[in-house]
Length: 93
Image (cartoon, rainbow, N blue to C red; front, top):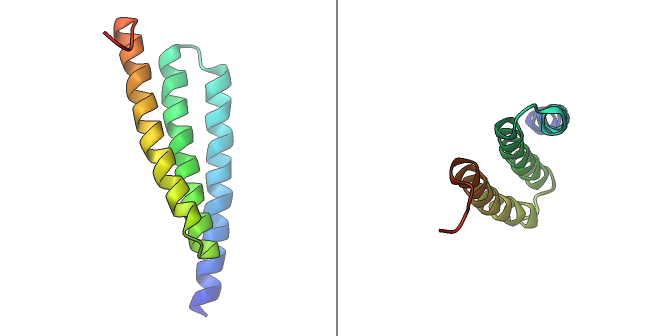
């Protein structure tokens, strides 16, 4: 019984994460300011990270967790670089 509950919980969470990614892509395209687009990019990488983790739980494969770790590291660095670019106009001083 608990395996069935876990399966359907993972399916529901993947569907909700897909919907959240669609809303984020909308904000990324329509966003009126650059700050909105950077925040949408940050939310998009976070949603994709969570989606990969749910795929890893569902399949039992470790490759999804490693990909999620790489996305987390690169997404954080990209967000910091974009925020610094908006603040000062340059990334490297």
